[in-house]
Amino acid sequence: MKTTVSIIIPTYKPNSNLLHSLNKLSKICSLGIYSIEVIIINTISQIRIENLIKNNHFTFQLKIIDIKKNEFNHGETRNLG
Image 1 (cartoon, rainbow, N blue to C red):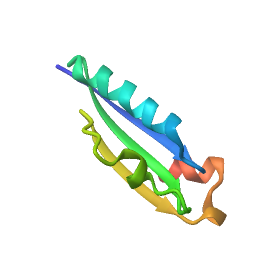
Image 2: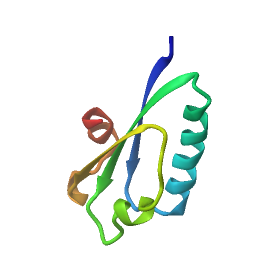
Image 3: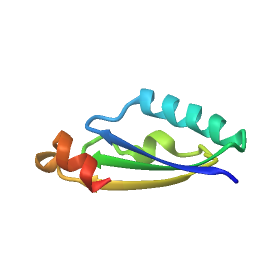
C-alpha cells in the first residue's frame, strides 16, 4: 500500500527553483512508493505559476491556491494549505 503524502509549498515570488523542486518530487512519486499531493499557496503576482510549470507533466496531483499579497504570512498561509 502506498503512503500518501501532502506537501504544502507557500510561494511569494515563484521562480525556477519551484520548477526544480516539483520535478524532483515527480521523480520520487514515479518510484511508486509514495502517492504525493502538492498544494501550492501562491501570491497573486506578475509571475504566474502556470507560466513556470506549463508543458510539464508531473506524476502527482497538483493544486494551486492563489491569495493576495497582503494575505500572505507564514502561519495563515500554511493553515490554508
